[in-house]
Amino acid sequence: MQEKKSLSHLNAQGEAQMVDVSAKTVTRRQGVAEAKIKMSPKTLNIIEQGNAPKGDVVGTAKLAGIMAAKQTATLIPLCHPLPLHKIEVNIIPDPELPGYVIRGTVITKAETGVEMEALTAVAVAALTLYDMAKALEKSMEIIGIRLISKTGGKSGDYFLNKN
Figure 1 (cartoon, rainbow, N blue to C red):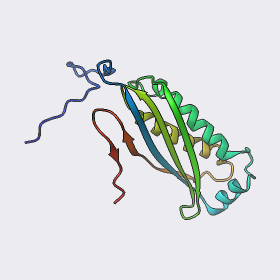
Figure 2: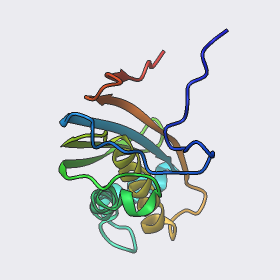
Figure 3: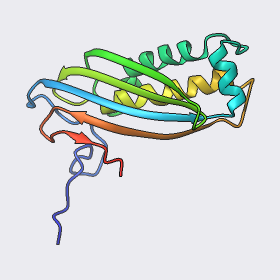
Figure 4: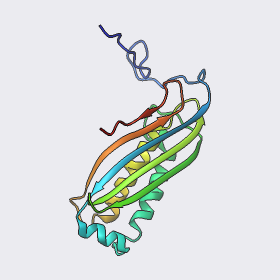
């Protein structure tokens, strides 16, 4: 029989709590996340040509993702506010999808990881891309928000097995 792992975000009474990370070692930590947004080839072409009615769709979505990563502790109730040393959001057109692949990388030196910041960055970038292009197509679909990797910390590194 497997040992039941306790959930660190619950206290002895089963109530939600913010985890005490003060005894943890400060290490360099990185989180990488990904999201995709599917759209028609026509919509992708209009965005890529810079002819969307609301202006710079990709640039605005990238900036929104960066800003969102910095607000993660405000948005997700039990996340710790962290000093973020690098936030990178890349939005890559993918004609095969068709649509965009959004990749977010967040780096810190802290007692806890930045997976949630990377996931928040790509989720909000995708939502912003949708908002900026919804006049062109309302049937766009945000898919595959997931953690690609995390490094640093006591629990060790994680890399998505893409098989």
